Figure 1 (cartoon, rainbow, N blue to C red):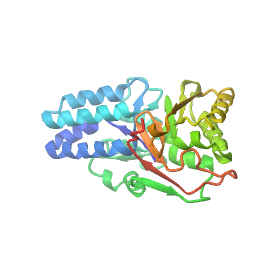
Figure 2: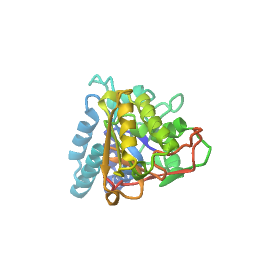
Figure 3: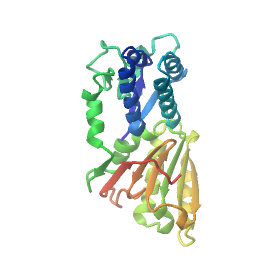
Figure 4: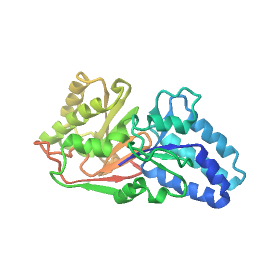
Length: 291
């Protein structure tokens, strides 16, 4: 559901060379990235700094302002794809090419046209040919949501395919599920534990990550959920937190929230039955106003 994108700062120079039309096209690309893309940054934070310098050089004030606002928005949304090992001297796009496979990059957005086109998992695109890439086609096929068919995937397969890249670099993850506090049945009980253990496995440094379960406060069932969270906290490095709210204060919807990104999961945590067979689940991009 989410894609990792490295923006070569030189792409801004390319857009600038084409004047208002080129900058307008760049703006539309950035707007599209807001929905389903996470930006790649190095451990020296060079990408953002070099992009900022390129934006300052844009002569057209309206376009400069809009591009700066979009870049700030993308960088604040996080979580970043941290590309480690940046020595600070190599050209950024060359570094991205070298480590792109290692960090799961899907798109290198660059004016460079002589990058490898085989033997790598990522795809390179210039400003003019982005619409014809596999990257764009895949995003177009997903649209605003996906429906996982009943019995199609296991719990781990659903999570890896649809949530893996979203959570991999997170520092805080929130699962909003009003139903957990109303009724903690057998499969829900199992699925809470599955979510915790999958995230513990998926995250690079789970002890640095807070996982918050947010649900309604129903005195009949909240004690069972609280006890489960307490027991799981003793078994994993993740920092598990249970937050409750009055029934009317939570929407009748369920969300997975990772910093500035949010997915609406119609079944919440309860995506598989007790035999680990997935239910029919719809997963949609959303702004997550439950926060």
